[in-house]
Image 1: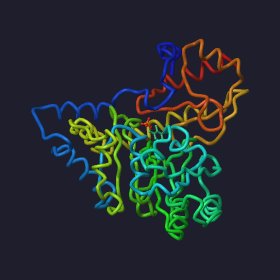
Image 2: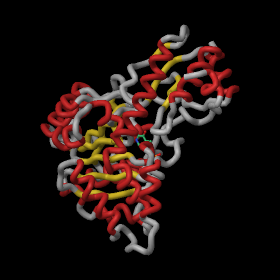
Image 3: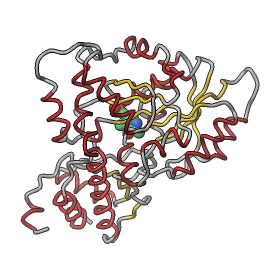
Image 4: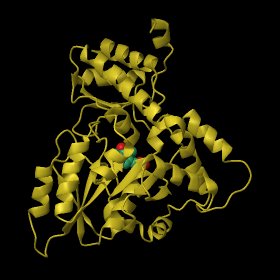
Length: 351
Ligand SMILES: *Cc1c(COP(=O)(O)O)cnc(C)c1O
């Protein structure tokens, strides 16, 4: 990368999140293609049917598929269909479900309580989950009914297939369901080298919230029910929650673009590689400490306060409140090597 290229980068929101990127070309092309003529509304169109079929093919399952506008709705409605109001949901202390959904899961389930477990590098462990399941068994405490894991986690770490199977085995032993928040599921698949089915239902996952916005769609997430019994009347939950798109074809069609020729995994692999490039570069800068291994497309690092100020002055945006502090740099399908190198150069000179 030449100095010229680095200098042509305008610092901005590139690393703030993977939802600051635009629409990837495949999704945009599919969106435009779906704009020909008229189509049935409320999900009765051929695009919606085709994406659901394609997802069933990719996940090697016969489950039910729904599309909603965002991840908070996906998680909240998925939890609500698993829970009675007197139930509880066990998730990690850093889980989006707990920290970033404004109580949506509690609201849409009509009262189910989120029980927070201390996580290790963003992950639940069987020991902490079992303790929360068994700490009380009396009628005065909300009954644990769901374990929720995020894959990859909010800290950019991954559950191995064995770790998921251990948690689902534990959940099953106590009669609990396993929900997976897969806002960045594509990044996990790209990194693990396992098939979508191996990372989900074959390892015991009952419901997957599959992220679209952060992997290059204009908006929208899919919900996959591997256990069809949980999907009963789910369309009513979506409608009541304001999540049934009347022009559903535009929520669904972009998926066709990214699900063709594995574009979603290719883009995710690129985002992961950009994070790796950034992590490698940061490791070379004195005064920067990486907080955990960058397993997917997030890099967490601590920088001196003065460095943050100078980076902000330069125009860089990134988050410092996610997980346990430090700067979070997020890469996306659109992140370029020149952007990574420009950020690295600015961090180096801000030290
Ligand atoms: C971004 C994200 C979501 C979805 O958030 P919305 O803003 O509601 O779309 C869900 N889970 C995780 C882990 C996320 O990072």
